[in-house]
Image 1: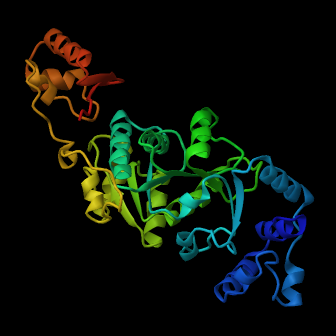
Image 2 (image 1 turned 90 degrees about the vertical axis):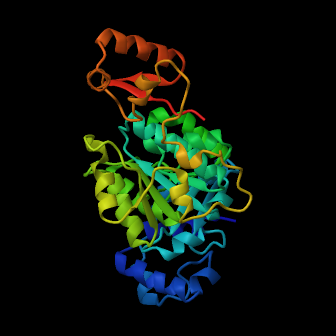
Image 3 (image 1 turned 135 degrees about the vertical axis):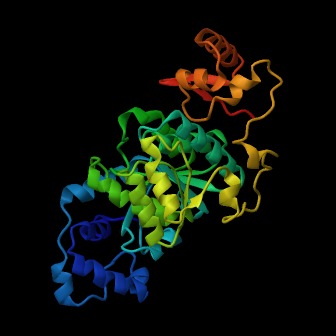
Length: 363
């Protein structure tokens, strides 16, 4: 049972100097901290105990109030038996994890799916399909609830009735970005939301870098779906490598700048992914996995449709294909190209996007 004193001692770690963190980490390794969950500083010399700053009363009151608000709210410390085992093996694991939802999911086998906030249709489509296939194989999905690829992965997991974990770059009581309110609510109800920041902490750019080490630390592998050269997803991939996690990258259109980061990762040794099977070859399906579609290894291939405009469909890629490109490839008049595209769109084979059309994946 949390008390003001025990909460205050743990919260004081948020203000403690780096030297104290290192000392306490050694203390933790020796097993002393685990034996004193309510008094984390027991056993430290008087000198070091005097170096520990006092947590502000506002921190303590906010945390206690938040914990009492909902029985699905929780606080895990590195002394707790149910603190995620995977995080204990990374550099500087968070001392505290504030959460909402089913905390038992934190120890489930997870894969991280990350990528651009301004994702292309191609990226969103592949994030959704790959996530769906991976969850059918028993994997939980971890991501950062950002717009774009992160949100697509969370949504896909939820639609499959699978487990998903969202790591936040703000307090656990704050939905960021604000427009993801419904996703935030659904993950809190059906999955789990966690943060190393106390309730009420606003989102900041430096928080997301700290958040990313938790995403990679919880996961056995990281799939980068879409990333530019300066993308935060590339930083996440570097963290994964430092933590000895597998890194997977989806190749994209060579002319699309938002995939230059993916191509660089592949050149540097990341595992190229075209379907879920490429990941499952390294991290097999888990016990109790659902049966996968028979064509999982061939989802990127053009299928025979029997349509009169099959040739037109074959020229529309899963990346954005412009009208000019289709005219050039098919040697047909613009009017004929447009008529066939409209027909294919009505039948659900393609969809219009800014800049042209993209192929729709179908089972």
